[in-house]
Image 1 (tube, one colour):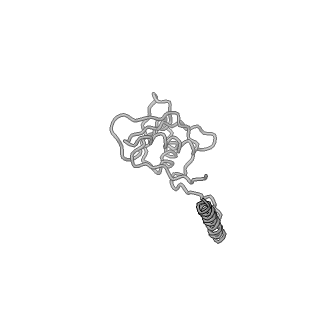
Image 2 (tube, helix red, strand yellow):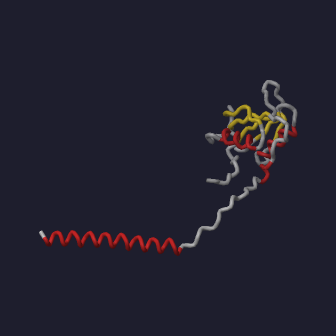
Image 3 (cartoon, helix red, strand yellow):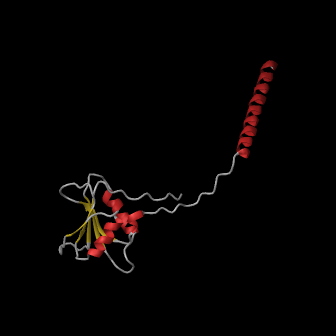
Length: 154
């Protein structure tokens, strides 16, 4: 019995010694590491899509997904709303699928449609007046459109 107690005490001492040794080595590694450089938020240039709605002007926009990419109209809606455009409707476009984005001027304000086209990365624009729609601009989002990358701020 005395031998068994001796082995138990010895094994407890070995385990405690190993834990302490691991703590000392870990502390030495942490102490010798260089501090991480300060992270500064990056300003991301949006390039040609930096266009915004003018102050005090309500440009009503309809965004329609004309591609097979799920959720593209929703992303374009958030993108345009962040730039001050009033997106009043978003959904899927019926008919043929598009590869490129197309902006339609509905109310006769070609300058407003041009602002939206620039915001969408220089998309082509057509004048298609339509009094049945209560919007100024319709955006048919094509499969090739990608929202610019947003910086990640945790």
